[in-house]
Length: 196
Ligand code: AMP
Image 1 (cartoon, rainbow, N blue to C red):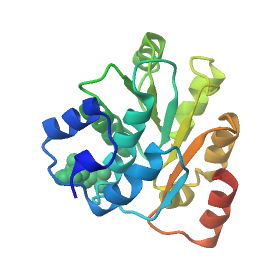
Image 2 (cartoon, rainbow, N blue to C red; image 1 turned 90 degrees about the horizontal axis):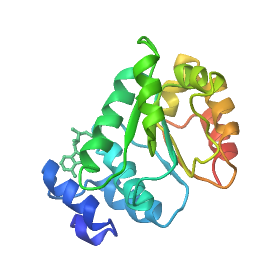
Image 3 (cartoon, helix red, strand yellow; image 1 turned 120 degrees about the vertical axis):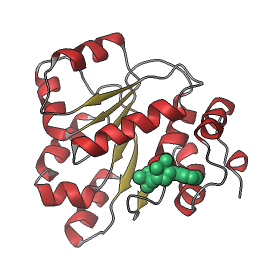
Image 4 (cartoon, rainbow, N blue to C red; image 1 turned 180 degrees about the horizontal axis):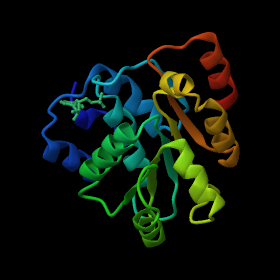
């Protein structure tokens, strides 16, 4: 299988080439085409499988060019949010799409400035994201694609209530991508509510 057969845009294919990937991983082969088609997705995939590119590449293809803040990726930890934001920036280097990183434990000023500049994609942890929403430095009215990543870890950390509040603030007519290494009943129930 080659990346060029998956329906990715030229600019995104150039980005993939620049980061040095030659062949898509199993999850990328299976997830990229339906995400480009705009379908919701539930995937049981662990870190290390190429999961980030499996959602980031088709999302960048769909967003095409800079506009409103249309994609939100929720992550359980700062480290994961930072990795995802870096990956988006890497893959998007031949587009004008912009990604921002929102997490706690640091000041608000830089994050606020980033958001004011105008971003297409936000990678965030739930707590700080809610703070920004309360401060009105960001809103979720234009979100078209929502990624819930590492949902089982979000459940373990106790983030599920915050994640549910955030999902409720996103438009109903959206695409939702759901990733969890394991899918116990509580997570299956949450997926049934969040996905179409
Ligand atoms: P992830 O599962 O998203 O955390 O990715 C694990 C690692 O695999 C990261 O360092 C990625 O840069 C790398 N990676 C993702 N997709 C590919 C690919 N198709 N070929 C080679 N490396 C990849």
